Length: 318
Image (cartoon, rainbow, N blue to C red; front, side, top):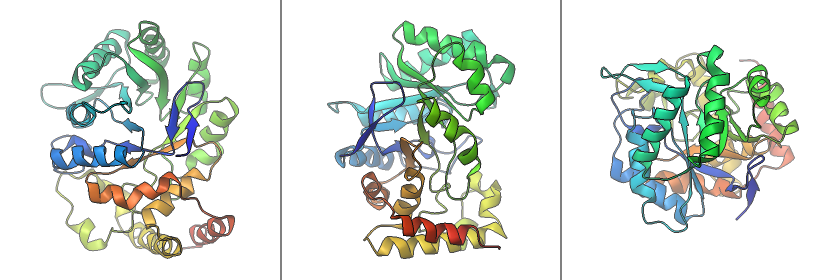
């Protein structure tokens, strides 16, 4: 199984990891709608059986629920897969989400995550969002202290810009960056990805299939029938005129995949992994069946001509 070292850490990770965002279930601002916890747990274990060796979650996913699902899934597995989670999003008794990076808040979040995950130490602890911007130095300094205290092994960031990374790098080295990256969201290609590559910051990209749009199973009918609290209803990529174009891209990925016995989703993931700055991709999978549709991306890679073929469609005028 191909593995790569994550930045300046000693973590050797597989090219894809399990993304536990949707596993948080319904009832919060960025829900994917109702989920079956038993199916989520079965998906996580199936992925590990296939060779995946890490999972990425966050405290805010399901307002703590995703971390609880992850804890149930990894219990008793030996060797235990790496568990990554995040801080900087808090919520109140009314389930309203807030942004906080003050030291006392970050420390409390870490303790709560350790308790939910049933861990003594988090393998990679990340700042989820650089908000409030004026507090990122305080938040990062707190992560440094938590690492020194043995609460987490390595520390990283998510959704940070280059100037923000430059600011906190003066305090301590950054192990990893987690940016959104897919063939539909490419802002990072000219900014944070080159910076991370140059400074030996590991990159684990999220939403490589653009929230399921490029997985090969999305249709206009399915979008129309999303649960009322599925955040994708509000995403412009799932609305016209973008939706029709994005589904055409997915159709091309299906064609490319058929040549190799691979799915559109595996092609979409492989496209992100072609970038030399990318260490691994976070892949959502909520059932064992979904695992089967993406796990080939552990080893599947695109040829240069296939990359060019996809690029031609992506750059074609709408």
